[in-house]
Length: 413
Image (cartoon, rainbow, N blue to C red; front, top):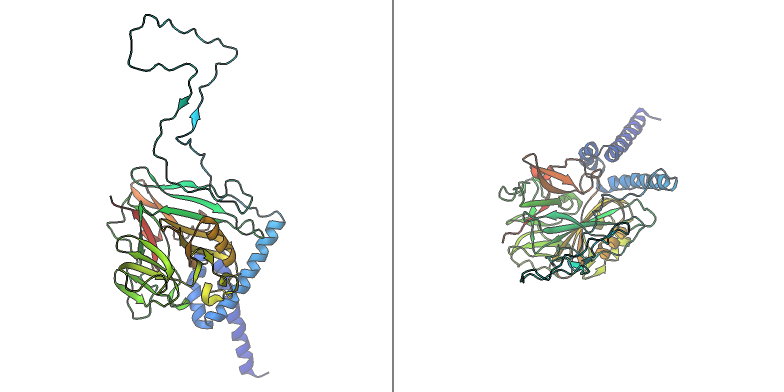
């Protein structure tokens, strides 16, 4: 064997070793792995990296399934579910007198002055005074076996204490009961969706970019409610985006698109088929194909390639995925995210939750991210939806972020 050939073989093994180390680091130390991903794609190309990523995701999935079957890993509820409050139409019976005690005799009321106040019979049923019910949705049919699955829990309130968002979770994959999909639903009559172009993504070298920051007027306690990730970076599909007149990437016909109108309305559909390019938008973002379109699941969730569904070779690869959807009346905005998800199981969770039109957002660790905002110690603080899976750069949206994202604010009267 010639020295030149030996040298190339050594270089090849070194490159493969570095790639394996990079992706193992991506799984064990997401922040480190994320910084290595782009250089590896530059070195090997997007499709080769996708093949390697697929190989490693399959290994990780097999390990997770073995650990679950061996009892080393268990499915767990992602958060505690609060007790349901009494609804206005429920009745409360007075406590009966304990049998060991004697009830005091009623006082002689014959000489009492007349009163305009109606006397309460000792046997009367106490009824709660009807009050406006908190905003919520009908509970979902369960897909798994965990307690409290599908029960909507109050999640976000506005400054007046009114519920504007609820959350629940589903177990959509019978082969992976540990795969949990978090579902957050926003009342769009009380909240407003906003879109921010990242400092670098999406965009082309030398082309227009965004600033990656939330407006100061929106970054106020009580007004800023939550934020979540946008779509793929430019090299993973060249999906179009626009915010406030800045267009870093042109829109493409037929792709799934979320449009935000100047009057605050939100729509999701196919560009040019459902959403017109001449409408009065303040922002729009494209990402892959429609997952749910007019109530029907896209059959390509079962057969699509990495071109449609991200940097994996097909939609069956399990990884952390996120998505967004709207109810049929466009009044409820849904956000979905969870680990160990394939495209079919993500689509099932979206359909089960009531999504009429929905699309994929970003995938993989560090990219799928959702936080709410609360005032703690006089400081606006980010709290992730998944405390463990989303614990990297938790406050990313409170500063300047490289990638695009969405955020929600209370709607002004």
